[in-house]
Each structure stands twice: as C-alpha cells, then as structure tokens.
Amino acid sequence: MPLSTREKKLFVGFFCVLALIFFWIKDTGTQNRASGLLEPIETEIGEVERISQEESKEAVVHISGGVHRPGLYTCSTETRVADVVEMAGGFLPEADQSTINLAKKVRDEEKIHIFLIGESPMPVHMEMEGTGLLININTADHKTLQDLPGIGEKTADKIIQYREQIPFGAIEDIKNVPGIGEKKFEEIKELITY
Image 1: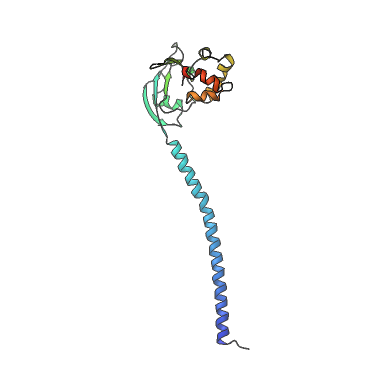
Image 2 (image 1 turned 90 degrees about the vertical axis):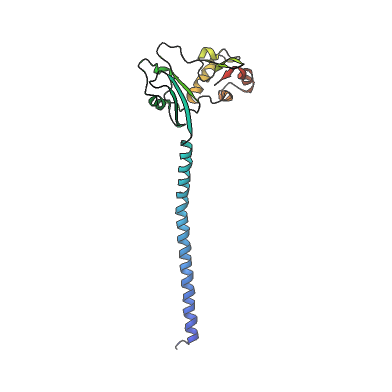
C-alpha cells in the first residue's frame, strides 16, 4: 500500500531528526576529545612559562680574589659558582680552589671570595655597624662556631654539615639544624650573621 504524502513527509522528517541527533552527538564527542587534547597542552605551556619565570630570576654577585676579572656579575639564580668563576676569566694560577664550593648555586647580593694559596681561610666574622663582630654561620670554622653559647663540638659539626647542603639564607635558618631550637636561637641570634 503506497504511503500518502503526509506519511512521506513524516517519514522524511523522522529521518532528518535522527540524522541531526547523530551529527550533534558525533560533533559533541569530537569537541570533547579535542578539548581533552588541548588541556594538557595548555598545562604544559603554563608549566614552561612558570619554569622560565623561575629561571629568569636575576642575581647580582660580587666575585673577588683569585680570578682574572674580579667584580660584579649579573646571572640567573640557577647559576653555579663555577659559572661565575668562568665569567670572571677563570682562576688565577695562585688561587686556592679547595676553599670554594664550585657546585653551589648563587644568591642575589652574594659575595664570592676566591682565596689565594697561603691566604687565611674564609672570614669568620663580619663587622656590623654598632654591634661589633658577628659570627658568619655560612663561613665560620668548627672552632669559631663553638664560641657561640650552647654550641658544642657535635652541634658545630651539624651546622657545617647542614650548610654544605643548604647555605643559610637567614639567621633563622639555623633552627633547621638538629639540636638548635627556639631557646638556643634566642641565645645566639644577636651574635650571628649569614
């Protein structure tokens, strides 16, 4: 029995609606997959930007002593002491390379002194206006650290071990050394610098 014109229109309309639904579902799925692909890319780009911003932090360091061109150098905070020595023309023949940690990363406003063979080891005190001599917890030797109240031989060892891994960036950082709590810090804080 042949279909009437009305039935043909309904039949064609029904298939058109089905086709539209099919293409809509297919298009939505493609968009979801595409957006799923874009999200990691956007995250990676954001991560790259964050890393490059961290790397772009500048440090101005002062290098003196046994190098060919002592002075101020601008570099990244990711720069190692060895790189700054190279920027300064390398070591002089009489430089005592055993007194410096070449692997250490530089900090802004840091002074790096390359001692000459026979020159006294790293300075352990720093003259501070109005306060007298302070013990530098980043450079003081074992014996000088023991001059601080409550710091014995074992604690001095711990301070030196700690700073070889992580240089002190503030006097409060000494509280990270096992055996130095708030009470001991209060006793020595007026006597130390970094």
